[in-house]
Length: 209
Ligand SMILES: Nc1nc2c(ncn2[C@@H]2O[C@H](COP(=O)(O)OP(=O)(O)OP(=O)(O)O)[C@@H](O)[C@H]2O)c(=O)[nH]1
Ligand SMILES: C=C(OP(=O)(O)O)C(=O)O
Image (cartoon, rainbow, N blue to C red):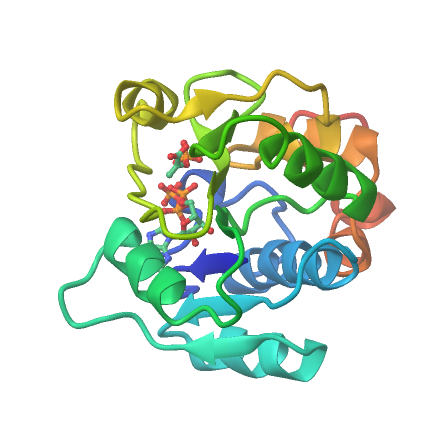
């Protein structure tokens, strides 16, 4: 499983200020740490490769048990994912997961990965809760991941031949881009790092305290 994380000073820019008493970099780190923690706790995942140029993210991911690779020189999210996928060991399915899923439950991820591998061996993706973005893309052995993350990525993945998975998996689909998304993730149940920041003294802007 390849998990990309932007440098914390630039990451999650739409979320800046969502927790007024929390430094933005701490919130961005907590989202990624909780995502990686849930992936590592998923028995269906053989290996977790975090692609990042951020030293704190790298140290946190390594301490949790992930492999860490730097971004490739050509830059950008999809280049980072191709780089991580090409470095994956084992020759099995390869998947990419965004690192902004602080409510992610290992059982939701396991169910989605099972569904991805069921039926014809083609690329599959899981759209985010709004339906236009992508949280998970999986490719069968021998098929390039061919990631097309970015604005409108669900349509781009479908246009590239990937099949959309239709399961519920609320904690997997709940990516956090905005303060409202953070409130929705809080309602689902945050992972420990994010919960420690979004406690009663620092609830998301606009959400009940
Ligand atoms: N390694 C790496 N990860 C990236 C890069 N761009 C985005 N990501 C990660 O890809 C995932 C999805 O990206 P977005 O949801 O757009 O997150 P973002 O770019 O941090 O957020 P915004 O600033 O709000 O667009 C997140 O886990 C990001 O950290 C990149 O250039 N390199
Ligand atoms: C990069 C993506 O995430 P977001 O829409 O959260 O920016 C994506 O959905 O492809």
